[in-house]
Length: 250
Image (tube, rainbow, N blue to C red):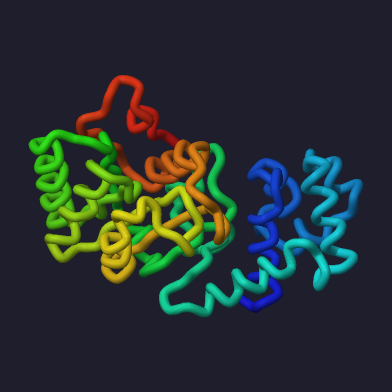
């Protein structure tokens, strides 16, 4: 992907309020980012693009180098030069097909690690952040067995069951997928920093959120839809009745 196209994808993902529905109307069947970035005001209006997003895109057309997002886009490009740093737009053949067929798929996926694992059969494992000792052992044991059978275990890098799920796969010397609720330039929670590093080396960490995104509460339900959207099924370990894990769906 050339730098201009890459920058357009990065811009599209940073423009607040530009959702999948509006993007699809603008980009057409080919998912062309230039048709989104360079459309006219009337085309944006007909596609239902919110005013704030419309204004940002039109401002970018007039002065891309002085646009408020210009510096962030350059930082994004610099990040993508890092080892095993990737951006997968929704129009790419590398984009996971199961996720693409969900009601509201992410327009881009930021990845650290090997993005090819996103195309493997996956099973999500989620649950309590404070499981019992037996729950933690069960999650790790299930994960190890699934990994050895050729299934990628996908979870959210949280404390508790998530961490046990990733650990079980890694102990079997198999890859695992971590979907996070922050930008990939940070690790949350910090206690899982070493685990995140191992996942990046042996599997892949994924986010739809631009670099610099903090761990806001509203990010995690959105993260959950990606976990389930990538997976053939979801295994819940020790979740409370009102746990977000019970609502892990695309």
